[in-house]
Length: 263
Length: 318
Image 1 (spheres, chains in turn yellow, green):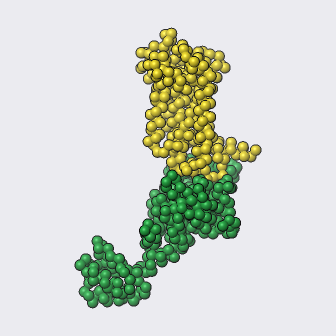
Image 2 (cartoon, chains in turn red, brown):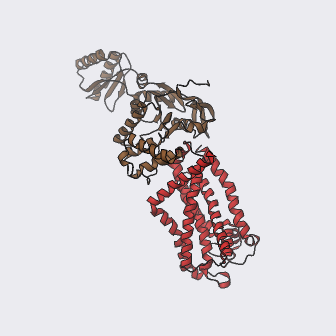
Image 3 (tube, chains in turn red, blue):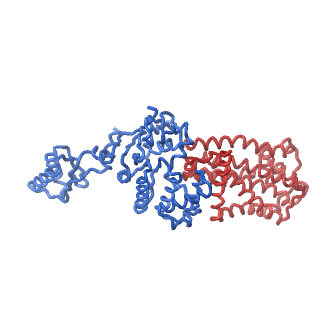
């Protein structure tokens, strides 16, 4: 029992370290929160006029669920940078030499980053409401949609922790920061995959991001392209299966990597 | 070799570790009595950091065994972690947090309750001369102050063994003196310290015994004085005015010392190990002046740890 209590305390202590840093140095956090807002404004007002949504619906209604999921995907960078910085600065090893619960460091990281992403999601929802987006579904459907987004972030979190422990140096971090863009765009985030050339459209439909986006569009009652393939017809199922699969692979890998240390 | 006497704070037997094709440790041995300071000295890649990582449970050895305060670092890793403090090459401080908050964080992670953590943080700030800085963010501290705060964070549980992995790397001389003073106080209080360093004077200043590492093994071990004597006894150094006199001066040095001198032509320097310091000096002065050789400098000196180190590591390469 005390083991469990200390594991929870350690998690909270590690998470609080991040909260305290954000409180003292808010600028990078605020910029991180506002970046998806910038993307929404760019697509909503600059490109959006040229994008046709199936059924002629409002593009910003179509855009917002994509932007929510994109923000969850971009969280992978926050996590990875924090984890790899701590590892490079020897902080991770220092914690590993303490009698604290071995789970504390990664669990604390996940608590801090989930909190960060929830604030980011709230900011983005506020932005959506300001530019005319609405959740038309029931409160339960809205809550489920938000739950799916958090689940996606949770999956990205463990992927990010694993990457942060494996990569060495800022170059690899930069590579991941670039690679998230094609992942975000090769999905139903900004345009319907049906408008993409054959293979790319199929890839976009099978992108885990698209499952969450389609499922949340449905739950929020926002417009979406008609579901014409197995994976788009089972978006809600896949919006759960994909993140669970990612967690099932990367959580054990990350924990093992952490326990083993640098070698 | 198992079943170590309790007075040994650290013990390593035949530790082996390789990373891919690189052998990091190749039969590393160590025995450190409680209450002493032991330095691991060696060039980059000699295995110092790997040895510390194994002893602090961060890395598992491929072979051999090691004990800290009588606890096996592999099988009893969790218990070992309650008995050690690790101060690494990098600062583990959160710069945005105050000195006090940093120590409280480490105290909580060492499983002190909130009240005990606050108490311990206050004690350690005072003990490391940081009491007045406690409220300021650690990012505003000087290099020496940060290191001392980091050192304090390693002392939360009054560890049986404190590991200092290159504790003064990157510090200016003043910061280095501050850290050395803190370490001396800890040692006076009975803490066992394992120090790794590339700086010979640091080992000379702090350690009672030194292990010299090369290629993953200990190539020499002893007190700083004993290691210095490895490089030969006292030395006679001459610096000549005219490089043309080098052969004649070398012959004189060889004769008065009865040993082979070393010549550095660029600096016009001749050095030789001598047995009888004073008679070698007076004879050399007389012979040089008889030969009409102008000397810019002539001196007797003790060998430095640098010379011992170069001598030892040079031999290991051969």
